[in-house]
Length: 367
Image (cartoon, rainbow, N blue to C red; front, side, top):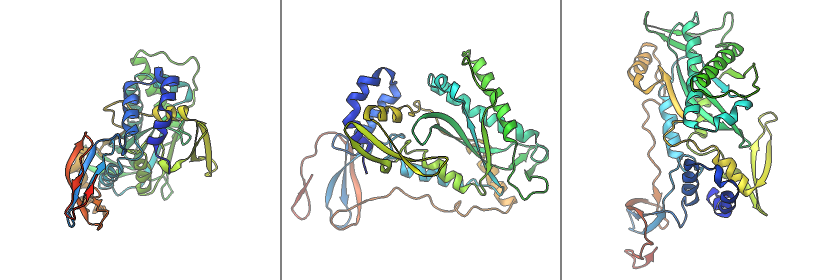
């Protein structure tokens, strides 16, 4: 496995020479953080074994949400929280895609444009749910913004995982959706969703005073498919939520100034290799860095964090208690002692200076 930090150390000079003028502050900050993740340049943490009192210094992780080497614990925590909100209804995965002609427009002032993309997707499904004869109420959705393809190209789109159910506040009822004469598998017409989504995006662009592309398609793409209980869809979204756009295990080679990485072809489902210059590879990764403070994952409607009491009430009324609701969230993994394997406790964190040798109980020294 090739560490992303080692790729950055090898090609960051070329990156800044070729693309430095195109990098914004957030991208430069992410680059600096990932470069020193868990290496000699990072801050140190002093830990001591609870049994044998052996002490070592461990490099800190960078903690950047775009780093593929960090945030695994946070991803698991997010997934546990979403599973705790699951409702007894068929779940659907809806994907709202921005046409290629609009992508250059979305690379500027990204906080506003990404927010528009996510809210337009949510407003679309909320409108359909409120007007649907079976639902007639407020739905809930978990929205996650993705900006990349598996080849790491720029491709902003929004995934919504939502149950085919809604709360009718007037009649105080929980309504679910079923296709006439079918067991399920239908929520809304994807063509109708695309038309409304397109109208909302164009209205948002006009409101912001932005110029439309000279040419853009009339027909947009929205995908809507059943995902059963929604568990697998949540796992898929959580995989890319906190751990960057590429797993380090997929960086297969760094040779002759080139970086090769593997990805799964969406059409053939086969693994393929893409080889690009090292500086361009870093450019591909950094173009997906989100603006500081921007929330990639959001909960809307009845799945919002403000609706915890409503979710709890629905679980009781509908006699549905997700098996993971009562489970204690996993704690962060402890550091294991290299001598005896016991748990090690943290003594000090964020040490900047190179540590002096530590005298252990056995009379040896450890750096």
